Image 1 (cartoon, rainbow, N blue to C red):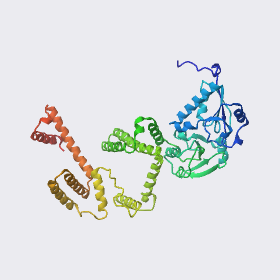
Image 2 (image 1 turned 180 degrees about the vertical axis):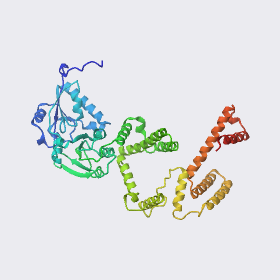
Image 3 (image 1 turned 90 degrees about the horizontal axis):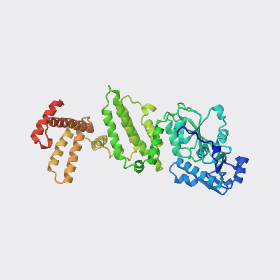
Length: 492
């Protein structure tokens, strides 16, 4: 079967014929005489979209506007248009299909029709938006070496390019955001020209920068970009990930059901797995890097997933996340990007905290910005540190140690589940206070002790298994004896 030749279209005895005409970039005076003649002669007419200034010329036509709202992807729209046109052509013998601009420029349905063996297709030349673009920009695209790029495929088509680039199909802010994300090496000052409503009465050129690209203009289906020159070529790894996240969100049943809330547990789990991978790093073994690479990727995808959900809800995009982070880091590093002096790491922390207090404002609580969802030991330590910052603290760790004794007595005297829980919490809070005064991270300290206990008990399990003993059947004295043996074996 693989060696069979595709039959010549002339040998197929096709009964249906589709005549494709282009409506040009806008005004009716840009339509060709041949196009007007075909519109008049062919009674069965179709419009890809009525959202075009010259669409009224094609009267009594069926439009496909509703498909764009009802279909999940553009590919679905294009396939349905082709099927409708082929069916109509074979039913009526001949139909007219009118598209914006030129049939040969960024018209996926026309390309699909031209390769479809079920119908005969004739496409007439027409003026495209490109002609108006070159006129508005005042350039010769051949001499300038302009590369035409589809905004939906900016990553793939602009990869390794420096410019100049003319980017079409920039019909929504999420397309602009995708384009910005694709250029990871942007300084933000690169010039970008927005071409608005080419061929229409309100046609204009808007000059902006890469940083402001998706902030200065609300794009629509008649928006293009011209990028004269980029200092470095387009990369694209983040854009590939963003496109993948959107695809999974649209097509995977599990991804579709997720919400910000349902992903919380996965975000926490992935964070802990990154910590495990960091702790497992061996400076002498580069192979241990691979685990960290994978876990960092999993964590990054959680960020991308949340941004994709927000984008679909029309709230914010990944571009806004990245831009906000970039601006915040610049703002909080005046010792790097400004004239503030910071010679040590402690100086940097002091500067950072000072800027954060200024950003919060005078009326804000000292606890603003402390995440309540953090692990309880870390949460407690951060709250205590904030309070200590305004003088509410023991003078040294001895006062905090005395508090442990006091809270232990209160725990012994507590009755009732609620009171016991409260007093136990107070005791743990006091222990965290001691850790803070001693410069020890309580979370790390408890984790080390828990890991030590786990190693020793796993040795107890090994000893019991080697002696065919059932741990659950052993007495406490026997278990304690084996525990001491495990400690001695491990040496720590």
